[in-house]
Amino acid sequence: MFIIPGRNEACWCGSEKKFKKCHLNREHEPPLERQDFEKQTKRHTKTCCAETLNDGLCTTKVIKAHTISKSGSLKQIAENGHVMGTRTSLNELIKTEGVLVTKKVGINDASTFTGFCSYHDKELFAALEDRKITLSNEQLFLLAYRSTSRELYAKEEQLLGIDFMKISDRGQPRQVQEIIQKEAKRQEFGIKLALDELNSIKNEMDTLLLSGRFDEMNHFVIELSDVPDILVSGSTQPEFDFSGARLQNLGLRGGKLSHLIYNAISYENKGCFVFSWLSMHNKVCKRFIDSLTSLAPKDLSTALVKYCYTFCENTWASPVWWDNLDEGLKSELNRRVQLGMYSPIKPRDLIPDDFEFDAFRVSKVWLHQPPSLTPQPA
Image (tube, rainbow, N blue to C red; front, side, top):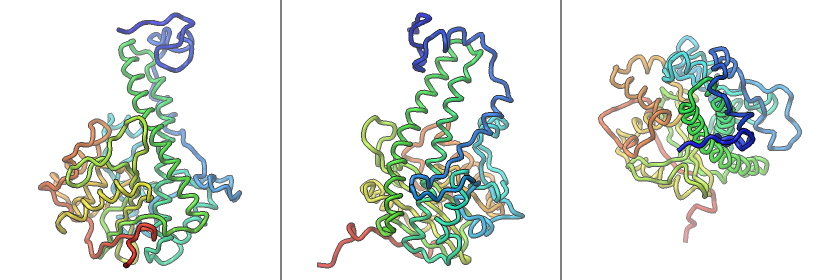
């Protein structure tokens, strides 16, 4: 039963403000208008993710950095300078009534975030952008480092959105206020958990970067015989593997969750899909990889496609490939894009089914593990 607090008591919403300065008469306040939402979409975090390196080299100019190389990868799959993907901005979701829509996006805007200064965006990733791709330990590490930085940035952006969500109950009946505040609190809890874990991962990766110990990351590399039709850069906490087995429980208090980083890039008319993780997450992540390698060869490409569209909004496809999909396949991918927003991921979502997606042509797979984890000859 809802109990209305006294004017000078703590507000029921948990803001730690007095009731009279928070939700008293909230239902009589003017509701938010469209321009309030549009103004919110223009708020962006602009902090260099490399500040944590403490090298004193950050410039004051934070730029719109690509998580997937524009010249090296995005241009290879683009049609007239555009790729297929989703825009997750609040303004875009207002236009589509909350539905994520796959559409053409210019490569200048695809996969970007204001998370690196001009110096670090160029210098940190020179081995990726300015040298031949050889899948060296350094290059694989930098792919994972950039993905982790972007994921950390995205979570900080989501936290800003929660602050806005908490005031979106203006002018709403008390029952609606309760629903909004409860959902805001639930999402805030999950985001703060993820931020704590991602900061821990980023700190560990900063240490490896500064010391040049690039071989201490784990990587499962899937080499591709030609340019992939899908590019991706992201990080997630694997809950289920490709057999539907549970790997870890999300959203529980206490204990750190394991994180898996992934990238698909193109180079020299071929490409690769790489899963990366820290050794502290080896138990969960290795089980995930083992379930992937146990799939029949014909199911591997489809599994990767479903994984990208289920877990990562930073997924970008060739318009030619997308247009050649039949409506049933497009519908399935659009369904997967919505997963996690309005319905939870289920154990069966990664299990092989009747759908087939040919976006990755596999030529070779291999595993790199740090020397400390590599079995030594007797």
